[in-house]
Length: 302
Ligand SMILES: [Zn+2]
Image 1 (cartoon, rainbow, N blue to C red):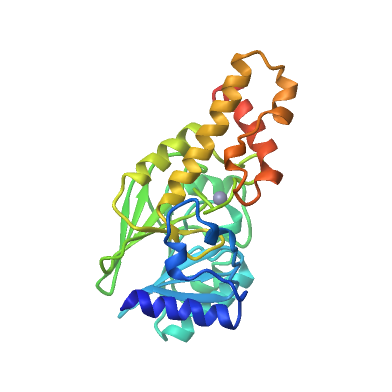
Image 2: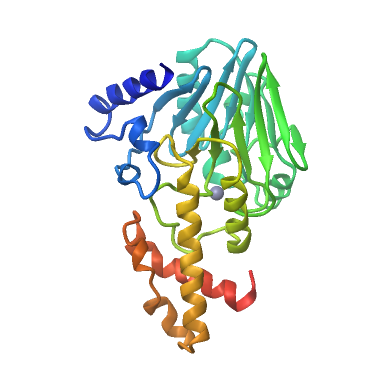
């Protein structure tokens, strides 16, 4: 019932505001490799209800919000312009105030613009390690968190829950994964740990390859059905995480093999490739820098 409603919503959107061949919910939930993830819908300004009370909104980055009887739990405001548009999108769904804003991590493309929510009294929440980043690299558009926590944390409001899960360093050192409560459908808002159907961007800024792979394995072992990524498509089958891990492992193995076989270091970026992953969106553009990043990993152990 809920699935078909959402499929209808996505179909309706695809028929109007977005590309005619925008993937349906059913297509997005097929396992990797999944061509639907490459029918890339930016979906800017799009709001979708994933399960009762749990919405995803996409500005320049994707975010989620949960509507409860006592107010709204919002997440990454992204930018001042996005936050304003997201506030309007929330208002179309409920007249309740935003009570909490949760940051997924410290990166500027996800955490700027929160003042509009602060002004209505929202409390800001992040992992405690984000605070130092905000102090070291201040930005006038970042609202400092009111509530921080060292491991996991559950945001409770109006009888609903948003579980924040910290798995240590991976993409930076303060990324949290967010699991909304709800029906049998289990979603995980997983920002920047995988971009379904795509290769990682360039030199993979902020990523620690070893802990990235460890985290992906831990997420793969967790009980949920689909991820809501921090950019791009609104949701994807959990296998998007496995696909990303397999790609990283393949690049690492190829770099290590070339190194062990004596390929000169200055040739590795130009010669080492993982052609079995050439189907990934952005592979041609990014693989060279991905290889260079793994070369650094093997060079200095990080
Ligand atoms: Zn990031």
